[in-house]
Length: 505
Image (cartoon, rainbow, N blue to C red; front, side):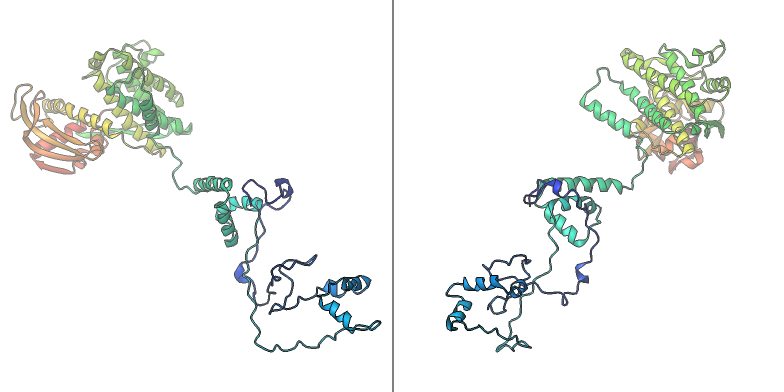
């Protein structure tokens, strides 16, 4: 058998009408081997009779005279006599005619009623094992699909696997079919991995670096806006109206506000306008007359309220394109700007941040509100990468001393105990963030311009990285946040509540 689709001189077109897969057959164990005729092969060198099936002729057990086929025994006539007269001198028939006289008839031997008993023990006939029929290349090739699905019988499986060791084309086809069957039986989720876009871009950029790379301080914003955009692309039209509950802390209590998925994207776009104004770009609130010619507010909360009040009927998925275009324009402008643009101030009304911290703050809010949207529409959404999450935690830790001073002026925190000059080490709290994006930070407790010092630490708080960010976002209360606390209880309480006070709409 060859692997080119031919068996002997047969070609593909000769078996085209044959069934592709044999019908069901019984197992070998179902056969009654005792009731079946045992095949006996003719002696070596003996030609098979015409029209006889090889292996079905009867021979003497001791290698004696060959039995006369039925067709020859019944063929009495001139042809039979001529065949006898042509026999050579050494034949049995020729010797019998020589002993008979002319004209004498040769007597036919009478057939015995019963076979004579053998003189000695009768040797046992060799038992030939019943083997499965030999299948052609075309039939075996047609069985590859059933073999890949484990739907062949035991005989067919053995024949196919034996054929695969000899036929390279069929072996290659069998491997492809087995791989395809593996895809049919996958149990994995059909949802795309949220980090797929980032991993693909990292792989592409690793092979061909961008001519104008994104600044390192803007990569977190680029990654989080891309992840949120992928979520928005996957949801349906009706899910843009799904209710979303926004939550943050004001003073000592939690505040909530209900909106929709489209309303959340409008809120992100309204606050992103503060960064676009700092870069000299057009403010989205003033682009289409949202404010009606009035002055655009700077507070993130007032800007959001202004946008929501101006969008009637409520925003739909049409808000996605303006928000997406604005994020791309911010990243493009930051990449093309001069290196010192990272220190440009972005005003939030009550406070200001450098541009590099403002984009990190916007990345943090994209992740927090992306999680709010994902929970509303039942979409898988994980935390940022460890490097980006570490930078977000670092920004919150750097903002805590100023937040503590503000709460102290409002009478919401304990008094300062040890004021020091700016830049000098002062009384500190050790903030230990564990897990994803974790690290160690020392928060100055008394002077906003002081430097945290491990030698002057009076308390320690241990938190998980994602849990600390949820505290900063106002999604969990300060009482529920700390996993481990040690040292000055008042300092611990002040830092936890100051972390929650960093949240806003």
